[in-house]
Length: 211
Image (tube, rainbow, N blue to C red; front, side, top):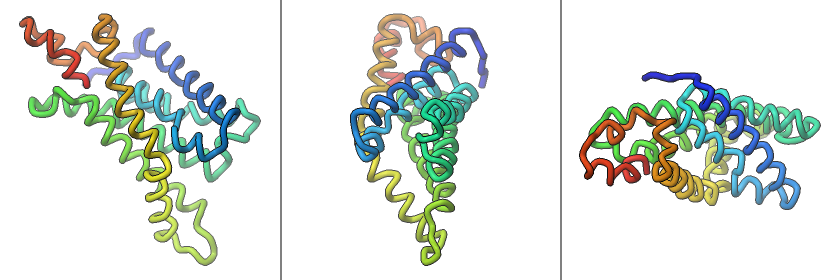
């Protein structure tokens, strides 16, 4: 796996982190916490960063984004420690696993056509599971054991964000397809097999391979 910290990738990482912070602030300003959780606006740019810029920059984006949000809102969002710390682990996992698993799936001829979508699914599950393991320490009470809190937290991480999951699995592949059609995607993802193929049939399937 070759990961280059190019100017394009670094700038894109910074931009997506800023978009995540701004979008989350907008949701908090015009809606309640439930609406923000449902749409999970901070997740989307981090997952996209993992796909476009690779696991290491994706990890950086995931870790610094909630920290920037925390500092820019006067240490209010995400709340410390029960919101901020689990979210740092969760978003960091999103960015890293998305970039890593995309590379893994690309290496398998049976999965390379859907590498990005499969990577997104694995990352979403892994990030939420890690969030639950970390977050359970902060939500368990005197009458609630860690494992009871873990089960409740794990279930809530999926049921309370279902709309965000659907939107992310729909919009991110759509964005990748649009970037591919415009010729921009190859600057980020030159390792996809279709970019190295010379046949017209391979070129016609470029969009599907990154969907």
